[in-house]
Length: 365
View 1 (cartoon, rainbow, N blue to C red):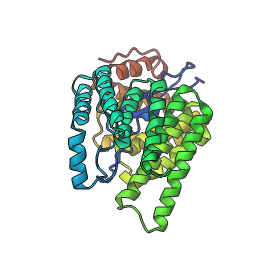
View 2: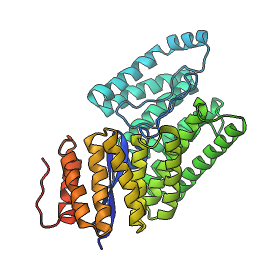
View 3: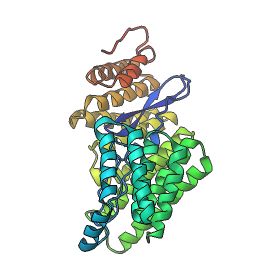
View 4: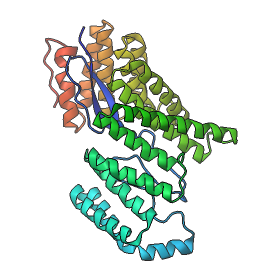
């Protein structure tokens, strides 16, 4: 029996587990713990500061002057127009040309101006931009103190410890600790975020909130992000049963928010299949990955998504002792991946031919 390692590929911004039957260290995407923004993306009220767990080239943050009344807002905009212009230029550098160092210099200039004016909210906003940029470029040692400063400034401006903005930044810190190998800090961060978010939801429900209420749905989505990230961390460190518990809870939340055919839900089905396969529960793994494959076909998912799902289905079939079914699924994966422009995914799927369809040459164009 082959050993199992895991590779992560990004599908529309979400990191997807792709199993592999070889005894090697996993090829890990350094951002694997943060690619859940597209999966549990949610909107916050326009009157609230915005933190987005996003790693797209345009790194969003909370809005600069959103909590002031109109007259105060106009004055603040006039006072900080130079800061806004620098931030806008930095975002443009990322969106159009992707020059992170040039964007960083512009953000630093903006931060110096904010520090001179001693405006904690604006300082926190720019520090968050810088922290997200450092996170995106895998500079964890730089991102960590910046996020800590953001937390301090948010609390100084009146945010409660259980505020969603605090939770989101704390989740980012937990993800950074995970990437740095700081196990105790990572687990403490993840569990605190999850417990606090559950407490928030329970209180909202006691107050009569539920699905259809924007703030409640935002908190459901936030808990989903936390569980998704924590589940992946546990999976990577061999805690498969605990990972399964987190991922199953995330599945329930995702189905509640988006239904059973949404891509975000299908990715979680795929992840559950990965966990169950690692646990030796191949029949159950097959059921979940097959659900992802069937729904992807029926919902018009793009080729990269279907390629990942079919590859995992092939893996599970091979473990079940069904080589013919494994070959059929793998051939479909080859067809789908050939339609994509993802060279890394093409190379990876093609490299599995000797495992899934031995003695038969395959190439991916």
